[in-house]
Length: 476
Image 1 (tube, helix red, strand yellow):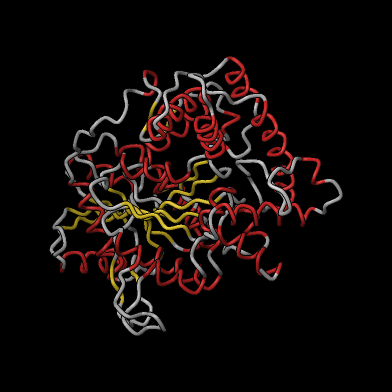
Image 2 (image 1 turned 135 degrees about the vertical axis):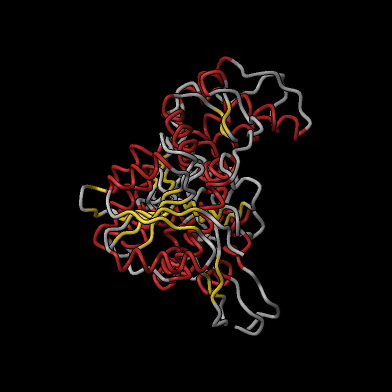
């Protein structure tokens, strides 16, 4: 049963306003109508509303200006923007100002009722005190799973705080290993959805022919191997947050279905003709350049604009200043506990190494380096520089540079060995082609992980689909 709510419709088209009003009143909501910004401002100053249905093209001005008076209005109304296709960018601007969601005309009855009901629930929810995961930003080194207090990360933290309770989709970009899933989890834990499920799905780790089923579910018998009904990630995240990692790995056919889901709020399981409503917050991420993917025809432009409402770009570890030392200390303490080792800080050489190394693999590379140093070390101080670690640094940088050119290997967390000898050094790459070096890196990663492609990809800092494509090309 839908939540009864007080709705203010701000729409100058009488036919549209009456149509919306009839559907909402039939569902049990109480509705008031305004034809202009002036009327809306007066209504908001006099009465309390749970939801505002706002047109952007009004006779006395831009609907976006109504956000200027919302902070002084009664209650905490959630704003749903109604827009035509041609003004999609302005709808996105409204989301950035704090709108709950936007609907594109013509609006289906089911989509209208579902969105209004969900918005009303958020508006009526009494804010609960959040169990503090950290102290105020300027007094703590942590924030919802992050460690650090650099200016670049404070921008990220404040963005997360400001958008946490919106339903606007968030598009997280950044180099591999910068913490995109941590960002999604932080958005979830800082929001009113935190008691709901957080479901993460790596779109690059699932074969293309199974990804639709993983996202939207399937019914028994829908395809070979579908021996039971499956709800899928979107339904599993109902009432919470759905994180779509490696979003640019989705093929164009499935992108169409994902766009339809985002526009309608409805899913359709593979093999079923019935549509089901789903209430989820979408956070997606990629380590690619999404604008380049759009320009080169691999990612739909309309889907990109639908997803890229709230962009968050994560800084590379090398751009985070003293955060590197804070992160290294916290990771070293945790790893030492896990491995049963007793360490107390870093040697002077290791402290210098932390500051001087450019960490192309970011936090993931740092974590791998620390684990190796703690496991193989014998002293009370963590030793990162000199000997094997210095050698691995040189090897790592050379292979990372190769990967940057090819778009394949982004971060190799340990030295690469040739097939013939595990004692290979950087000199063994002499005379080898770029393709041969890349193949060695991938084959060794697969061997280290006993043939597990997903784990190998994680260690290399790339998506599994990248490895699958390479192996197919090599005939592996």
